[in-house]
Amino acid sequence: MRTTLDHLPQSKQRELAHVVRVLFEEFEAAHAMGTSKWKKQSRIFKIVLYGSYARGDWVDAPENGYQSSVDGPRVASSI
Image (cartoon, rainbow, N blue to C red; front, side, top):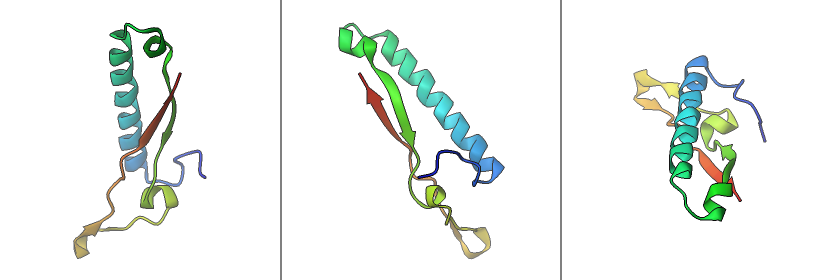
């Protein structure tokens, strides 16, 4: 499993960095409203990208009408 985004085009790296930033911001906002102990102790453990961009076999051929989409990252939280 890859652990960096170095294999992706710069534009996708920037796009995914923005997605990760928003995930953390929204998590922190929701986390701040938590009242139970387990909610206050939770954290984002891992964000996993999957699909063609993760594998490195995406297609970027707009002239043929096909471009791979970025499959939504999966977020795992831990207590």
